[in-house]
Image 1 (cartoon, rainbow, N blue to C red):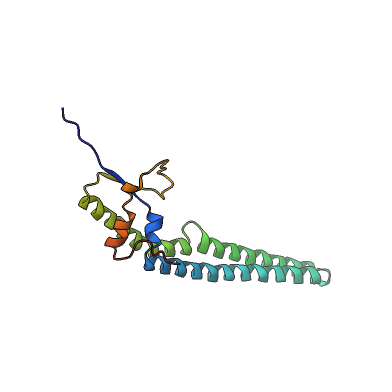
Image 2 (cartoon, one colour):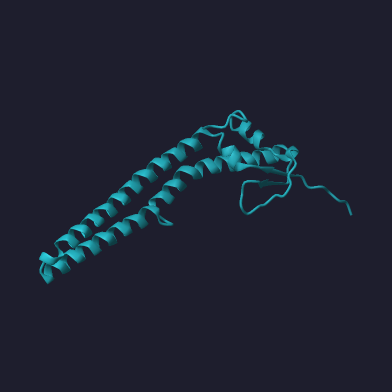
Length: 162
């Protein structure tokens, strides 16, 4: 029986992604979208608060029917605001979809390049050091091929974008 050694390596995808201008640009776009949408959400709740305060101020002057109508308007506006918030920031919301649309092509490019490095250097396994599911207690820097991936992507290691 012959024994054979397997070659392992690791990368730090977080470190690699910080070297990619398109990743920084995508994060910036997502941040702008998120801030715009959050502004809309905040504005919706400010309007609801104004409606409620106006209702409280006018409540004694309103008939029962008018009070009920104003209460229903406030409840409906609050429901719409919460639906909008869920539509944007929910698990399948527009922010998540935008994140997927912008970041998946970049992540796919990095994954493909990691595969190319693995084949070229004859690695059997490459682990992602920055992944929460794979924890490394110790890793020799001799096996970190992150800079090779950055070079192959056409960028200079150590020149992290800010």
